[in-house]
Length: 218
Image (cartoon, rainbow, N blue to C red; front, side, top):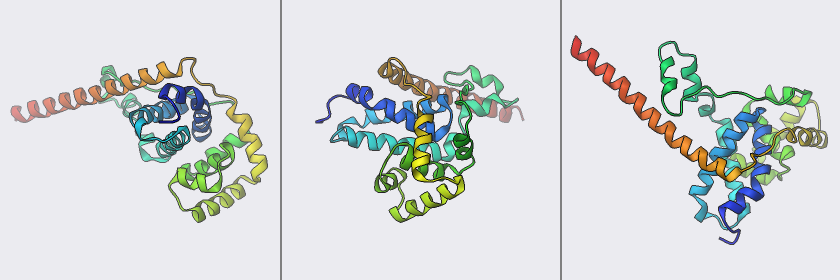
């Protein structure tokens, strides 16, 4: 790969990707979670990329997909934290309520939060990340015409124009910083992901055992 190693990619591109994730989510903890997952997946597929730009585009698509997907609102640890039946499951590996760390509220972040995730992502990619309409469409997996219409609707909903939104998002993006040792952070995230999967398997085994015991006692 002409772009060099994955380690160089993390050094060169993680800060920009994290700013995009923060503008998408409005929360520094969730943004780091999204970026960590995207970088883990990017490393797993590293040999498929021709250069850092291709790897960045792939990681950006993963950030958007994670933000707009229904899966982002169904994190098992968060759900279990509010469950009186399964509350003890937080003791399994990888099960813990995720803290939140929203940035200081401002007019732009409040307005963006009211938009649907897909529309918010469209505006963030176009004006927060500075992508062209074509590259925004690629990151969203949507036709260019659809993205063009969404941009117009989004700006109208916010009551602003592109240059002013870009300026506001640039200031907002400065509120998040990458971890001091981003590569180690990615490695730890990969271990945590494996731990979480083991926790899911352990929880499933316990539930199956309970069902079996109940069935045998009838």
